[in-house]
Amino acid sequence: MPRQIVITAGRVRVLAELDDTPAAAAIGEALAAGETVVISSFGRFEVRAYPGRRLRRFDGPGHYTGEDRRVPVFKSSAALRRRVKGGSS
Image (cartoon, rainbow, N blue to C red):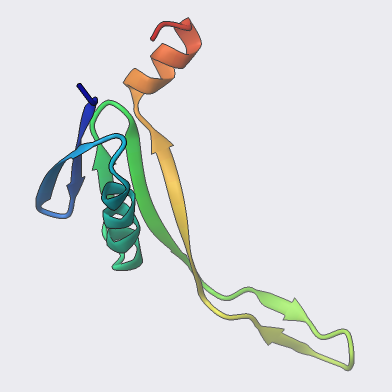
């Protein structure tokens, strides 16, 4: 019997099998939409927005501002950290 996980994205809860590739696609789509994805007993994926940085212009005088960017970030749950630290499965 395949193991199952509960994925929460926004207000939607999805029960997905670990071997199911559409689950990974659903996580990617939720992140692309800017939603936070929580996988119970595993962790949280979210998208952080960073403003453009001030950069030095090498080919001439002055500075310019780089583009704003969005970066996916993972925060592991306390349960996952305990399991990794303790070495239990």
